[in-house]
Image (cartoon, rainbow, N blue to C red; front, side, top):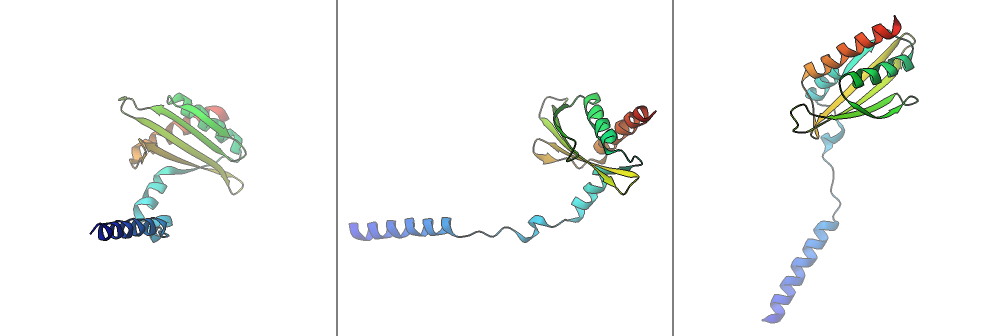
Amino acid sequence: MKKIYAYTGLLIVLTVVMQACAKRQPPQELLSLTDPQLKIRSYQTRVFDYSDQNLVLRGVVASLQDLGFIVERANASLGLVTAGKFATNGNGIVELTVTVRLKGTQQTEVRLNAIFNTKPVDDPKVYQNFFTVLERTLFIAKG
């Protein structure tokens, strides 16, 4: 009787080990864009009529600081800025990633990605507020 329990236990352990070693396939939709993602992307992206990427990048940094964010990294060659701050209600952290890239010869595209407590922000007003501040900053910088 002890042998039956031992073999059964061994069989269960081997089954679990084999399951753990099995190659798991990621879901096919993992890297495909959905309609909600495309909608959020339209909120996140704005094109400005500036041909100087560094001017826009400096404007992004200044805007983030005006909004109370702490700029963690700024890489001019990649056109990338990351920043964060504690939420005003004290219940979380807001993390931002901003990419700045030339679009043609006369325009610069800015894309803001906002995350609140590890969840993407999908409220268009959040993005509109940032881009309004950025527009004002760029107007002053250009003036």
